[in-house]
Length: 246
Image 1 (cartoon, rainbow, N blue to C red):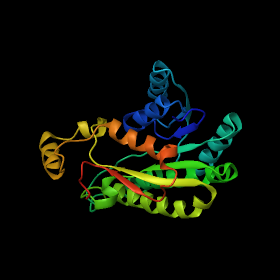
Image 2 (cartoon, rainbow, N blue to C red):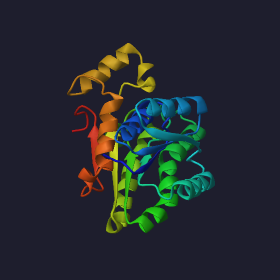
Image 3 (tube, rainbow, N blue to C red):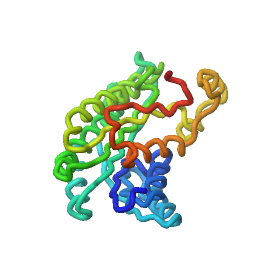
Image 4 (cartoon, one colour):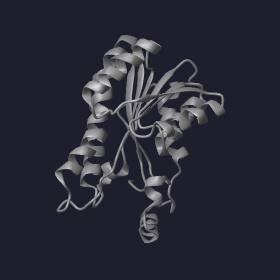
């Protein structure tokens, strides 16, 4: 159980982020549902949490913005006194072969997926050091482990998240703070639902378990890493991918 813990989940208004928020709340953590797009979807996540007896609040912030992220962290710490769990889930895709990929598409993905994780850790690390405790879980991707044609920007950002995870784990371990990454494979979300059936079939053939994962699979891995059961685990990348990256 995570009763009494304050958790911040970035990009928690839908998909994997929403499921992570619900799962943390289901273990009695108070969840801050960060969003940058739709307030309505974020409030829906809060409502879903309240329906299962949990507590949550929606909080807007573009985590790719260094100054805005700093302000968010200041406000949250002032309001709640601490943040015990940080889940860096916010992410976007702008897929395309590199010969046609625009500079804007490359930069935007790096800014959200990689710099966003840097920004949140940068502005929260001092507070966690004061607390002498904390759990940071970064959502990477199997694309960052294996690479993926048509995703130079996304794969680079997620590989960067893995490097950031390992480095932060080394820097913060001495003060009781663990930093780990979860690398989902192909998960059944709005993002994958739009893939053509031929692509889904081809991808499924590459997965040893011969199916896409569920958002709950990723969320449960995050809950484990956020719990006391994982207190001696840091700097690790847990692939939730049906065996794709083994």
